[in-house]
Length: 231
Image (cartoon, rainbow, N blue to C red; front, side, top):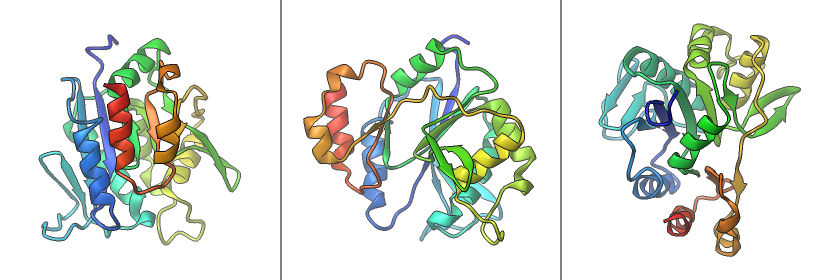
């Protein structure tokens, strides 16, 4: 797949409360402000005040709404519902499930995919372990369309809220993929930084870096600091 013909969808976990609305706003104004034609970004919400609750899901502009309450433990519901929407309505080669605490340099991500010849078996992200399960961090993980199809086909096997063995969304996805013989790639890149870290960071060394994660801090200044340095 050529870098220009490769089609990417980015789904960003989003929320209005707790200051996350400012993080979403910062995403819009920085890393996702000028999208190439082959990239689409959607902001993923559950029940959002002032918006009608869909029977399953609905899309308005670049906002995706899933019929589930907001909350960290409900992230899997939003994610899988979004995967279903994309498979039914969008043409794409890869899907990046990110969150509004991550800055994604899209051009470098596209170059990274091309450079490493990522293919239909791609499951890429920063490695984590939980309860013996290897998984890609939910800060941002990349899936080929074929693996999105695999996840949706087997969605009833995911450990959702209410399951006695419930685990978080990224771990549940990792467990399902491992059970289906999919290996997590160890090629992923990520800089972990707070705003203070970024002020002292040497961006010149990040020639291939496509992902900056702000370590669970709710600080929109981080986006603008990275954006300023990468311009």
